[in-house]
Structures are given as structure tokens and as C-alpha cells.
Length: 160
Image (cartoon, rainbow, N blue to C red; front, side, top):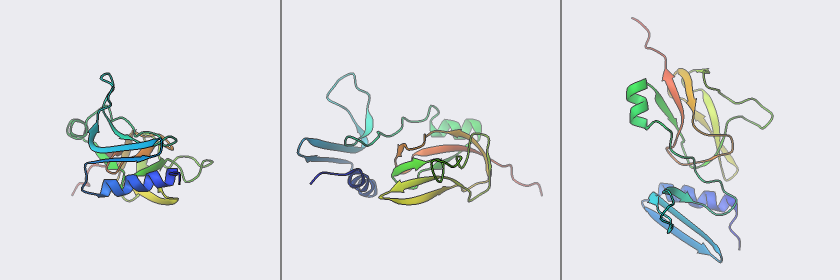
């Protein structure tokens, strides 16, 4: 029995929700190694990665250029994070425009993207009204639970 892309996504979802820090799965010549703490290849020149998925599944995005603490403290930005592991989609369908672009004004609770897991789509919603400053992922990219997808500049509080 071959592992499908959906099987791999389900394994990754279950792993993210588990208390395990490391998982290695071998099936014939296919090998999947997943680590929450980072995985270092046997090559000494290789950079650490979070996941090494099976063929046909895109690797996760690199970390944003600004660490979360720096972006939040220095720039007043708030992260919009992935609610689950899966594939990120910027628009409801390939022929539709993206939900948001940098500079888009959004209300609290606005849908800014979708994540697909096992053919089920979940909306990514903002918790705060504001302006989308940066988009850190691309359409069709595999994302991890808790990964920062967008930076939003919150609206100033109303004056009383």
C-alpha cells in the first residue's frame, strides 16, 4: 500500500497534535522523518529543517525574516497563524482573487485564507481589525500548526 499525499498530511496533523517530538516512518523505499525540535541531515552542510515529507509534498516555509518577538515589539504587528497543518490557499478558487494582499484593510473575524487537510477546508480568520502588512506564505504552500502566515497592523483603539 502506497502512502498518498492525504495520508502524509493526516500523519503530520496527528503528529503535531501528539506529545511526541520525533517520528520516523519507513515504507519500502519511502522514508518520512518529522521532528518538532528540528532535524539535522547527515550532511554537515545542510541547514536544519522542521519536516522532511515524502515525495510530492512541498516542504514547509522558511521562518520569516523578522522573528515574532522583534516584529511584534518593534513594529506593533500581530501574527495571524495557521490553525492546523495543511496546504495554504490564498483564494477560494484558482480563478478568484486572493482574500487579502499587503495593504488590505480587514475586520476582526475576516477570512484571510484557507487551509486544506484531507480535502476539508478551514478558514483562517483574523482576531483583530487592521491592515495586512506582510504575507509570509504562498498559494499552495504546506504550512505547520502555529506557523505565522501574515503580519497585521492592528487598528488603533477608538478614542473615548
